Length: 380
Image (cartoon, rainbow, N blue to C red):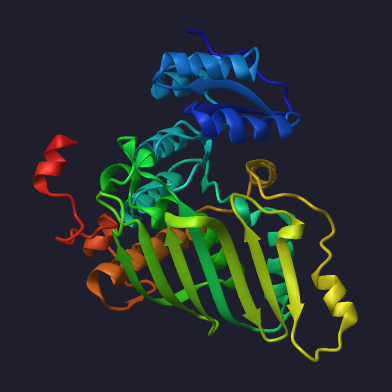
């Protein structure tokens, strides 16, 4: 197989790894939204039929590969978008970095803090960076809210609630890699709620302490189907976080009560400006402030396209992209600390989980009530 022809000088050469639903939908849509800046030159999938279907949807000029190493060696893309199942992310991200590419990968970027630090080490030895798709950060409503909270325009954050209350049935878990620690990394804490609490961290900054619980209430899987947490932030605010796949009335929600206003986001899988509301503190006489709170300059929905644009800006500037480095590690550490607190029954402090801690290498921490049995591991 021959590599694709050289791109237009002003456009980055992009390869897609994993050509399932997320690639055919969100990734392809994002690339088309930035067609003046990127050129899709290659796609990789172990399933030739799925690969061919993606190539047909993508249009002419996209070389197909069933082997990632072969594609990286022949095509040498500038940017790789990864949309494979979670257990493949670390290995594929590191391979792309070593080949000189930047990476933008679906969540979770990896399945443990140890894996994240492997990726960070690969970054240090390569010219590129690895980012994770946390597209909820990039809608104009989220950008506006972060500016207002960070500047103090709505007063100090005091109380917050973050919920991902979704519903997944038994058929959902019939996909072999779902609900298993070694292939998905965890349950809704890793695979569903991570988008929402990542946005909470993006809005409120560093957390300092987590007290949590988790349970398997309905589904016969290795990981949890529900987790809850109480979180203290370094700035003093306190929050509740719920990650559920047991909730018939599905909703994604963040509410932050600041000194002068309540900031609230309600949506399901994506938001726009109308998804956000600002409720002033009773008796606050500040019409001009309230008008500013509610009026972002533009209405950009949260999307893969919005985040891709931010990554392309960073590439052109030669700067670390958002959603990478310590910023993205903080979200993985939050997940690990939530699991550790839930499984040990005690609070966990930020920075506590390091090499040598069982929760550094696996989200289940080898806890006997949650870790896969030896028999189960032998079947994998």
